[in-house]
Length: 228
Ligand SMILES: Nc1nc2c(ncn2[C@@H]2O[C@H](COP(=O)(O)OP(=O)(O)O)[C@@H](O)[C@H]2O)c(=O)[nH]1
Ligand SMILES: [Mg+2]
Image (cartoon, rainbow, N blue to C red; front, side):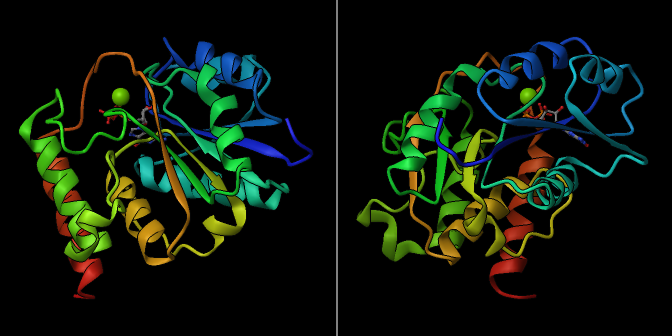
């Protein structure tokens, strides 16, 4: 690891079964772990605290986007140079973190873990909804003119990413729930950030965001794009 201070920001909501393992594994690869919990009604926060990581806990439940934004602010205040986000439900394997850091060090602003290995043109194994949301998010973020310039992202909704703090500071993030994934993609495009996708393997979906989350995500970006 370089001399940069690397933080992981991990949001969680009722994840007591998985969060202990996730933060313990993540700690091996970063300087600080921040677990952000808003109103879980199980023992998630206690489990995370037992692992000796920084826990931010508040009520009521505000959503993943709000939790990430809270975590970003705290990490920046504590002197982070790099922030990695990953999920606490066990879908993301922390063992990829060194790879994210290595690529970031090659001069990128953002590294995105892509579940589709960056192969946008092959139809994803997931549902059509996922493909559609990916398409809409790219369209609204990068514009159609960039489709054939290899700018569109293969996975616009990935929760596993690494950011240089200077890049994150340029972003104007406002969303509270799952729209944050699309909004981060939008801000990566708007600020013309140097982004690299790396292939990641994730654990099979346990719960999954709903179609409604997808529609909300698209609606949010549409409003943001056209300043409605
Ligand atoms: N703090 C916080 N974390 C959340 C909230 N909603 C989801 N998360 C976390 O965000 C990650 C992704 O959420 P999940 O529902 O699994 O989304 P999916 O994997 O895209 O289906 C998980 O680690 C969740 O625990 C929330 O309201 N607050
Ligand atoms: Mg999940």
